[in-house]
Length: 329
Image (cartoon, rainbow, N blue to C red; front, side, top):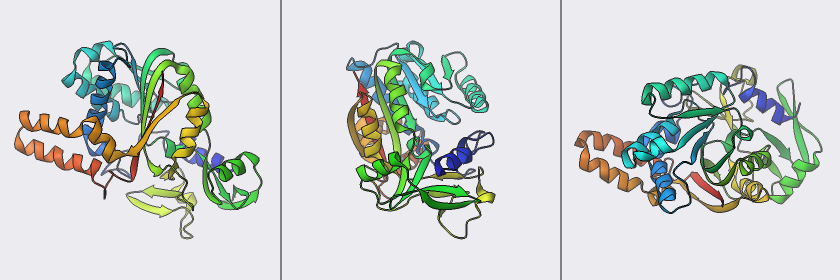
């Protein structure tokens, strides 16, 4: 089978890694910005409010997270909207796009426990099911979880008996590799369809996503496996693929030029790509921390400050992770 099919089964098959709830953070296989600090979602909430103030986003807009896992990110956004502009909590429509029923159940229970009936939450299995006039879409580490093809000097990989073999010619994959100046590496599958679906969903929207990668493609393979906070290069000869299949995360660095092109081809305007550190600071992370300092106990403030530092310090998540932003007006 093609490697993209193998990766799709690994992550999204009936017993795939993302088909059921997995702990993220200390008890899981990896950390994310969401599991690190509530101020990640809080800063996005502050930005959403600024979009309402500038007139781009309507007060009855849909605030939609794609691939919400437990629902922590969107819940943090809701919590800070309630703190900063409480009337928007009842006027916004909050939406999660989640294909798996088990995860939808987890998300609904978490929101009910957190907010009761104060937040109206809707679920859809795909973007194609959602139709609205005004929207803000958010996603965290979504593009690195799209299945990909593996390419090496003109050949596309298949998987046979847990072995990767570069043996077939694929015109589409080769075209993408040449466009992004790769003679080897990962070619993501599905960015174009994803962008088209989002473009058809709302009359106007902003989409913001955080992920690791660079605008230009890496000159080599970045595919790797995360399990119990250990990282293994996919082509490590000591890896037991059968043992790790569907029980660990598999991911790669995002080529943001590919994401940008996919959305622009769908008629959506690229706004910016910048380091997570710069993006969060510009959207008001430090102002939120100052507000906390004025109203909270010093011990609580110091605890939240240390967590927030991980989001923006270059040697943690601040530089390696990027924020990419698009708009359809």
